[in-house]
Amino acid sequence: MGPGEWSLFILFGLSLWSSSEGLTKHPILSRIRRAPADTGDAKKCSYTFLVPEQKITGPICAARGYSTDKDRVTRLDVAAVRDLLSKQRREMETLKLVVDVDGNMVNEMKLLRKESRNMNSRVTQLYMQLLHEIIRKRDNSLELAQLETRILNATAESLRLASRYRELEARFAALSALVNNQSVLIGELEERCMQVYNRRHEPLPMGPPLVQVVPENIPVNVPRFTNEIQRDHTRAFARERGSRSGPSPTGSTLELQKPSPKNFSAEGPYRDCLEAQEAGHSTSGMYLIRPDDSERPMQVWCEQGIDNGGWTVIQSRRDGSVNFFRNWDSYKSGFGNIDGEYWLGLEGIYNLGKQGDYKLLIELEDWMGKKVYAQYSSFHLEPESEGYRLRLGTYQGNAGDSLSSHNGKQFTTLDRDKDAFSGNCAHFHKGGWWYNACGQANLNGVWYTGGVYRSKFQDGIFWADYGGGFYSMKSVRIMIRPID
Image (cartoon, rainbow, N blue to C red; front, side):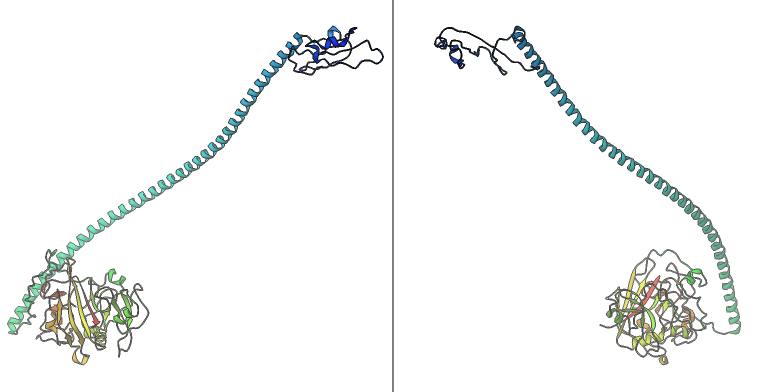
């Protein structure tokens, strides 16, 4: 028999010579099964007894015959087996605990491996972020270095410009001194001329009467008196705008210059700017128009942003870049830059006005930035045979009525004197206009900076009812539009 198993064999051989009935009456022996009797010997019986006093946990084997003492299982053997079983059970429980602990350790190891992978991924991510941050810092440092270089260059350029500006100031001071000396010389020459005329007893040519209007709304806080007239037309400024230097008063005709491509529409031509607006053009800019009975189309600036739009600009003054002291042919054909200073031309204005009933709008701006206007209910010119005589309607606006006194007058230039003055108003006012004798407005005069100017004659861009004759406006626009 192997370890862990135990068996109990009890063999009882009894030869009873008494009757078996007496034995069966014993309470213990009442459960004894009688073995079949040997047919050969009826007097001999064999019995097997099961002893129930102790708990049997294993099989009981019964065998015939007598067993020897060495094969008999004792209580000590059973106790030893039980001890062995208890020890094995404890070992098994210990092994179970060890297995549970090992399983927990395995799970913890798996979790640790997973956390380790996560940590590796996070470390990699942090490393990439750090790398990107380092690259960004490096780029920022490079940009900062570039900005510092640009600042240094700008500083050097500003210092150079400041030095150049000081040089220009010195040159300007020298030129101012020269102008003053020349003014003194001119005064001396005028005195000599007066002495010569007095000797010959010839009357001196008198200038036109000065404008006597002293309006209540004269611009205040004027910056200074100035003798500075419009800019030198040989400067780069005028060349950049595409204009040429102004011709002499008796020079040839100057045609309108080709405008820059911005704000230009090649569609058309239209009869006027109102027709261009009705065709869907709501943006102010340069457009082609061709009035009725006109030989060729012409470019004009259409103002679509004020008073419902549709205004055709026939004159614009803004910076003194164009000389307006011109002859009759120049004023007839037009001159200047469409996107800057220009005069549309008397013939073009005449052709526009004879298409229908038009009204006139004059927009004035002083050197304080204030804008005023004068509007006339009707406007047109008579043909050249009538000297492009001006015809106006009634006035309304906030600039004052300084043009009605010119109503019905012919246009005058230096080479065609049509005014009512004994002399030539164009000579004294340095421009072309519908002069009376000579009048309350001179919007084609000399562009003076600063407003109030100092001159022997009133030759600035003045509007008598706004600023008087010695206040030159900063900008002027003359526009016409069909009457609604």
